[in-house]
Image (cartoon, rainbow, N blue to C red; front, side, top):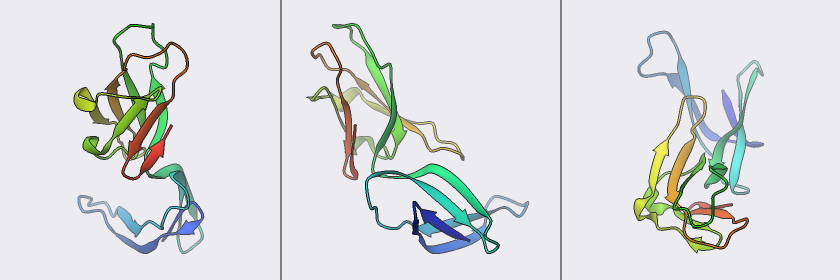
Length: 147
């Protein structure tokens, strides 16, 4: 079994039995190649018979915001937003700005909505006061930045 991250092959591909499975299921471990660019990449798994499985955007290098909810508010309202995405591993490593204003991370929370199919997470942050209109939500970790 070989794994590719984008078009780059992983190294140290090892297939082994799933530890808690008695029905013969296996799992794959591999070392990801260095990132060409930050953000999500598709993962392709290929077996010895050239059967392939495509997992679109299944791995991310650095953080990647998928969506923000709610995406609008009434000026002056005290609201909290949820930034859903990938690569949000440690709340102490996350910094968020909205419209260029640093968010107070003291009341932020990190939730995992991960499943076997999709490792989605959400960071919940209060919206700082700002000028009405469009505003970028920027999430930064030690692994990168996404808007």
